[in-house]
Image 1 (cartoon, rainbow, N blue to C red):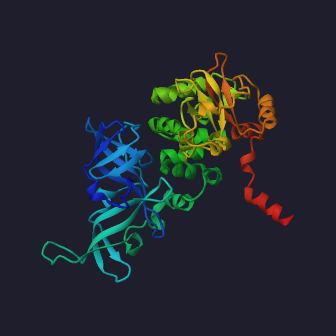
Image 2 (cartoon, rainbow, N blue to C red):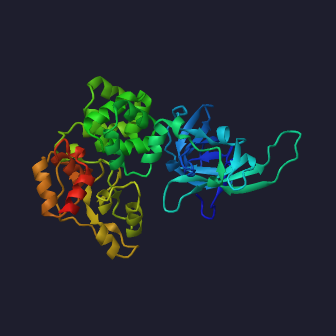
Image 3 (cartoon, one colour):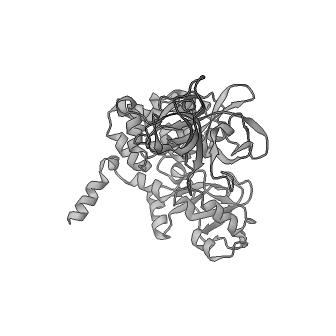
Length: 424
């Protein structure tokens, strides 16, 4: 949300132009998509329904929205142009919430919803519907217009999903605050039918995070129940190394069909990853580490490290390379560790503080050698560089652990381990 804009009423967003970072118009807002929650909790805003030039409507997740300003919405510019189809757990804000009859909890009066406001939560990317603008009274064409007032979402009834009607939605409400690994563990212990229902109701980014934490069999089962276009969307949202591992579990014809449905810029890194043996540095690496040119400043490096979507291991260091900046990059020059970034002035060039002494790993490095490398140098991530000196990616300690642990390690309940420790 733009600086100074603490709240936006959705009626002001209807028909507003949506722009990419270069100022080109993507389309216009036709509705907002929310997920109602039990217990009177404010609904989570999932995204926007945007009508593009070709007149069809697409879904733009709120994670792609960088600014909501007067008369315009700014996005990252990376949007999926597939036609939007509403899911059972989704509610259209303009189409389904406005004009609804509700009741004020404090007085018991009936009211009509005229508008609702959305706000971005502090220090998070999540958005919520927080206020409701209503007209008190039963309404009607021949009745006197009642007073209008703005109240908290929790101050009205008539919105909440009822337990007996919600099916998978009740599970989503219960699971909402779980970390992806904990939600994956909960899904793993559900029936196949219920697991598929919950997976279908999750948004693409959340489902991608959860799939990365599930055993291979569960991943394949869930992906196979999705429509192919959505399965491709979810693969695009996954970390490239995890998506490549999942694709490698599929029959060849299914794998190629999904890769063809993906955007070329997302499919190409996966094809490259699948060309390496699974238990090598090349097979385990991610193709999306933080890559900077030597003339970037410490301030720029720290801004990149702050990205909430990065794992702690990937945020531990930046990789300094000649252009191009996308993997495979230009000549690899070295790394700058996070602690070094904290010690130097913001205007310092990363090229002046780069650590070039630590030799990178070739993509064919086997798992035992990779494990020894990380342990010897106390690293949580290591650069993977080809014979030509180009950075291909980075392999992180969490990916190494996934290959070292037994196949059934996810079946061990963490609370059982904590309980045993407490008992000891």
